Image (cartoon, rainbow, N blue to C red; front, side):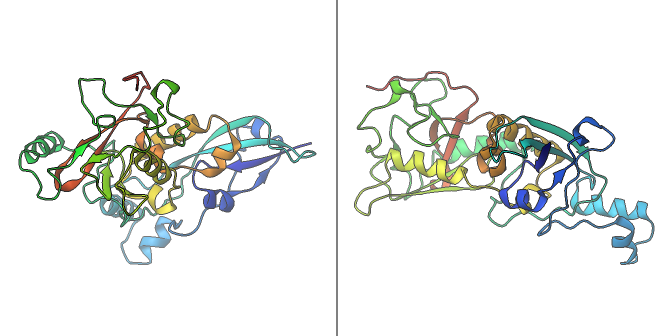
Amino acid sequence: MQGYQAYPPHTAAETQLWHRSVRPGAQNNPEEPPLFPLSSGNLQYNNFAQLFNAQGFGTIRRARELYRRLYQRDATLSRTVMVFQVDSQQESRSGSLTTYYVASSVPIHLTQKPRNWRKDYKSPSSKARVEGLKRYLDKISLLFKHRTFGHYTPNPLIAYRAFRSSSVIYDLRSPFPNAVPPEHWNLQMPAQLATSPPAQRLVIWHRRLPWRITIEASGPTVGVTLEDVFTGIYNQLRQQIGHHEYYTVELTSEDRDMLTAVFEARCAGNPQDVVGGVRRVDFLGRGVYFVGLAKCRDGRWELKTSENGRRRIVLD
């Protein structure tokens, strides 16, 4: 006899809340998809009529319009539930992974923008009309050097050049230095300073990431090194996201579908990665290869990534 355990592609805490065993024959019956309990915390599941009529808003149709106007998102979401097949006689978690697409008609209350997100963050699916103007202003701002930042120069190994192969490739999904190709590895490379003159702190951001990445120097007398940069970026992108960061008004249904697709591709059926849930690195989409850092205004550095790990330089 075989049992099934449901692992939604989200956080580990949400996995524990949604864990439920279903009948062995449920996966063969499309009319009875595997069910899972609704999560708690920042998510609230209510009926539209009970929610808005209690507040005196009138009909359900008006309630739906008010809800969409308030959150600027559709109330009904769809879920993708990943079910891992386990032999009940064995405790090992080796088996097959099955994906079920379950449509939910229950409204989900999306949370407001998380406080730890950047104020200027725009989701990938949102059409920012001023994006081109913003990039132009960023380039213009580099002409006027910041008094505490203008004299910093990045290490040539991590300096981003759009039309030159001068950056080291690093897969941000894997720990350093395991993800660095052998031809890029040098015993002296991790100890090299990331900037000249040495900096004790670097603030890094990416257009797809709603969080800032802060890199601190590992030693008080030495500045930030290349190892500090790669290790710090990996550790911070390895963090799991919370309910309030997945179900927020800043993300559309397309963004959540993208996160789910990237999550499934990263896990590749590995049970440990599935239980780990969605992580910050999944916000990068397919562009998970580090190709350099570029100067930005106000003393920040922009993280540049690529979708392919093609060779760019062979380190001596």
